[in-house]
Length: 566
Image (cartoon, rainbow, N blue to C red; front, side, top):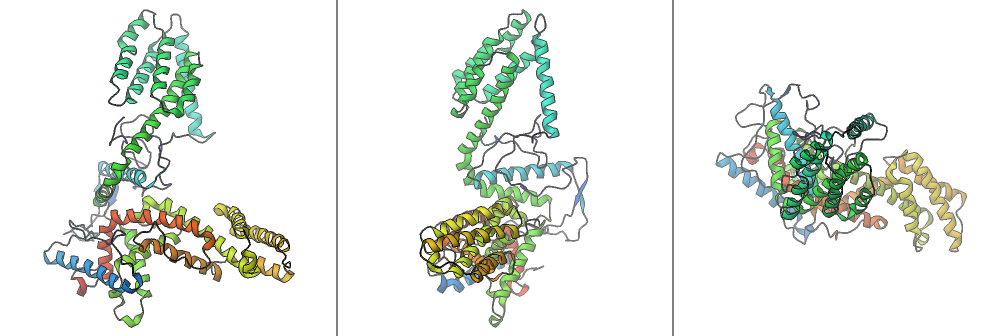
């Protein structure tokens, strides 16, 4: 098993190694849409054109990141901190300009006009870019996803691919059975299978397994086996017994039951079929073990590795930051417009860190079907969208609980277990929001009414009147409206709370104040906030220099920075 290079480069579209005869198993932790698929990969004989206009630098300006120490007195020093962020970025830009070394990552290559005509990209360049993106995605997943594992690919039941695979396998094993049934038996195909088994067993050995390596080579000596087959003296049962015993020595404990089943098989063809199936599982176990072993080393090198691979991709795809630029531009405009006009030059009051944090928060409101997702966040799109869906659900849950509290009074909501039970029921009905929101909230309103009507008499309170029942149900159902006041209020408070995780020097602690109305979902929000900040902290460290170049053009005028602000 290989160490640092154990994962072969994958083709970004077909997930097939360049020198492999079968697909690699698909990593289970990869996003549904892992990276921006390169045009033309679906047909390897197509010609692809892209503009050559692109500017990049050598000494990128440092982007403030979440490791920068923040003063504990955040409220009093906030303006000073933001001004220091701007001054540091501006000084670096002026310093680079003064030395003639403007190396902030941009969108055009130095000395090449942005209106340059497109050039023909060779298929070799496209495939190389695809491999780089694939490797970068896998490395990113290993570092970010704590549960990352390689799993065996299984085609959908009754699919064409599965039926074709089963037919081909059946024909192969029927052919082996026919050869063994001949008189005398024909062992040519069986010998090839033994050679493959030998290679698989050797691939599972560690460097220190010298004795086992020697034992496998001696027993599965292919020249001796061929001589035995030639003289009709080959004992396949003895070789199969040795193979099963060796597999039992090398397999993980989770495969002991599979090995036990192998020992109970007596029919040669069925035994070979199962041996190969279990060997495939053992190879996946070995790959996952190797990944787990290498993960600490990958974490140390991942930032520089991902940045270098992205730069290689950027060199071949000059417009690869188009959506990122539009995303940061929208965040800049929102931030600048939020500054009071009385400050004069509002752009001068804006910190790059604040703009970037607003851009990150906007990702939690992104249209799930949009094709303009920022390129620098594409590898985390599935994770961020999952967080977005969980936040939408928690917003509705907190809104339902707040509506119920206002309708029946804080006294009944303060009863032990009442809010928790109501929360569990609401979460179950809204889980995944697979059905229409109107139907889900209709069921929620009925269940809330049922729980309230049961709890009031049990605790000595008067039951709800018909008018109160109608009001309670109507307010719950009105949460389907996007402009609902309570729903928007809870949503704003949740985003304000999560924004604190991006600004806090210790986001994992989540010690900043919890806004009112969010107490019932505090544990879930803290978990989401910690995950959110970890994902974006890594993103900021990898792509910070590119964000610096874009924000420098967006925030600083020619008079401020002495540079082109197109």
